[in-house]
Amino acid sequence: MARNVVISGYDGGDCCECTCEGDDDDYKCMQFSCIDPNAPCVNDDDITVDMFDNCGYVSGIGDGWCDSNNNKEACGYDGGDCCSCTCESVWDDDYTCGEDAFFDCKDPSAACFGEETAMGNGDDSTGRSSDPDTEYEFVPWEQTEPLPTVDDAVEVGTKTEVSVSATAHDVRAGRSSGEVGCGEAGGNGCAANNARDGISTEIESRWSCAAKLLDDEGPCQIEFSFAEPQNIVDIQVAFWKGNERVRTLEVYVNGELTHTHESYADSTFNTLGVTANEANTVMLESVSLLSNEWISLIEVLIFVTP
Image: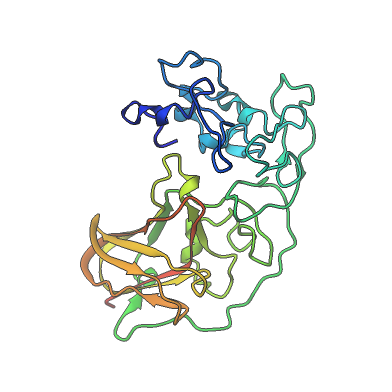
């Protein structure tokens, strides 16, 4: 979708049914977002120019998986994905209507309008939203190990108010296994505030993001803003699945790049080696995430002078 612009030749025609050419097993002409004014079929496809302004994750419209955020008139009710009578699985069978997703039919023109929501089992590889009202049995985990400390420093939250925001997060409800989204520990999926709740032994209490959750597949960002400027002594980050995968973060203080950190698995918390004076904001940005990769931070501790 990021290449579906005039400067990139509208992705070489791949986004229009009448100009797309795909004849191998990896790429097949299946889903279209035709906005090329020179294409004969520019007005024939389901995805329109207006959807890029009004909808999130446009490439997921009409793929067989109901995205709650796009289940509205301006987004074509997610291309029919949310109604059992209009859903079609066309994306290499990655999503099978109603089995791995759910139905929440809000399209008044659909024959099955008003059907009850049916929820299946999500999959962490999809990164797609589940029904936010679905309840899971949640077994809380207790914090069994003390959080790290730094000599002659205190965690910033003990000195000033800290607000947290992120460019995107996995909004799905989770299970106590922690394998699919985040449950009661976060309350709103794997939201940014989970990385500031003082819980590092509960893997459901984490922030999770993937490039495919962003319309332009840009970097995942999480930012911490302080009510009062602080002198930073150290920043420590606990990466989820730190023993299995390497993730690179760029660290920005007051909007300026100060460090680049490649995660290591020797310890639950990685020390980023960041120091700064008069810091108002700290932003962590993912680097070179592939389209199927996630970055998940269980906890971010920012130590400042007392």
